[in-house]
Image (tube, rainbow, N blue to C red; front, side):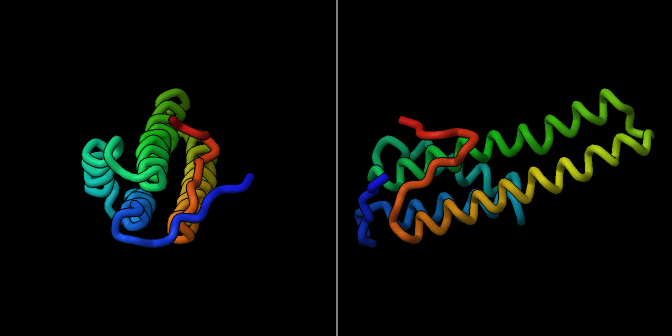
Length: 131
């Protein structure tokens, strides 16, 4: 897997790739809705017009953010709805699921940010390569 390393420059998309990965992590850790809206705006504005490096990171982080929302919010809502809000065993399932899932998503975001800083592409395992 020989991937070309992009040298940092103003036109290489290096900065945009780092911003995309940072917004993914900010969405998971600090300000969920606001970071997602900014990431979505960047995606729709620059995805087709940016360098291959920035385009890859924008596509991956935007898709990963949507998947993260589904995995963290929708799945927990389904579990709570199916099992009942007031049952203790519901929380025995929901809390460990949320912790493991959230931690994994954050760790993947850290890997993506490290790859963006190194000037390399990164593909999230859930999403895989996108065209």
